[in-house]
Image 1 (cartoon, rainbow, N blue to C red):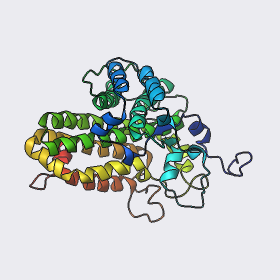
Image 2: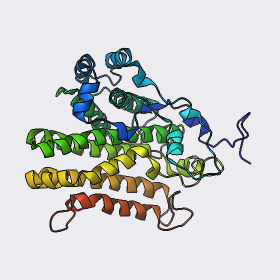
Image 3: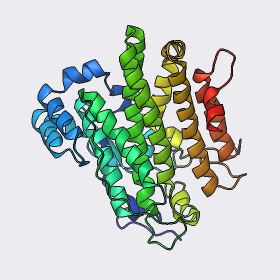
Image 4: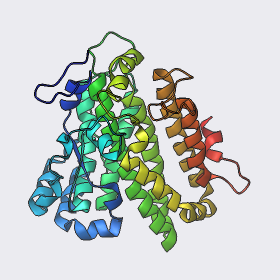
Length: 367
């Protein structure tokens, strides 16, 4: 029989203690993320200058920038009261708020521009914290690339080209080695990092679209290159999120995301940050076609990087879920296996990157 939390009568999941040990991540609503001109208008020049200076240094915390944000725009750190602690009704279907709750993401109520800058810095700090907390089998250079993508977005946002490497403490191990169980914290922090990267991509895609509309080839090239870096980082983040023995996923994580501990129908599809990113990409079609005509090589590399994200997601899913098993989202209908569903999403997302002949360059490049 499932344990009950004192005073609530609610079942306590195997992941409950690990989840509550993770600090909440404060992020703006993804639909509120401004474009770069609005960001510059809403974030004081002094804050941007401080951040540009720290972007060239190695520490992940940006202490002076965070202090400047708090001093000049104190409401930017405000969050919707109680969101992280609201009671989940396990009798209802899982929804977007439930997804935020599970992964301990709080949504900023005001000052989206400052909140976006703060959340990007916080995502970098979450990565550094996770790598200090638990070992990983991923190559250190891949993790440096992930940190560099976040740092590059911060630098781009504030108008700096000086991006220094992030000082990361990385402990490596062979997957399957006998280690303390850190899977719960990694699962939650990994999803927080991926949400932060989705917000990075929303911001940079907006800049890419504006550059293509304005005919600003240099900015389009710069933002297109950053998109490639961020997509590669997203693939790394997915693999980091699942970088622990499969037995721990099945014993504690999967069961914690379903009744009686959580509403049924839990899925990454419910991530509001990923949903906004997908919506933004659909709106990008004219800009994508413009980029393809102007710089076909960069267009193809972005497509290849996007394809690699889905390949990494499928790789992680295949480690945890049997080939015929459905995702939690599909459990009721058993419409298709989880890995097949990822392939379906991959084909849908890559349509915008098809060539005139209908070939998906990115899929070919990744396979």
